[in-house]
Image (cartoon, rainbow, N blue to C red; front, side, top):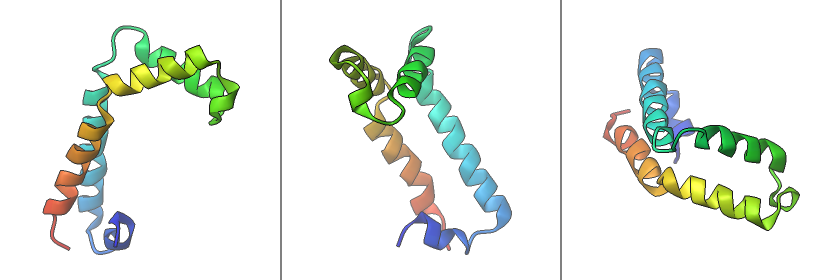
Length: 88
């Protein structure tokens, strides 16, 4: 099953540590964006309201470029590593 199904087996402290690890990992990836790019990404996401059709093709291309800089595959792989190593 998934993380949510095993979360009940972890102590409160274990869950806090897991959230802290993922938060630090997310910050490391956000730091890969240049000055102003995080703000630009946020503004584009707000403008989209969760719907790609609310953006121009240029804006969609820009979001794709910014997200690519964040290395989402590496983030996902790194975020799963601490979870797999834990014993329930």
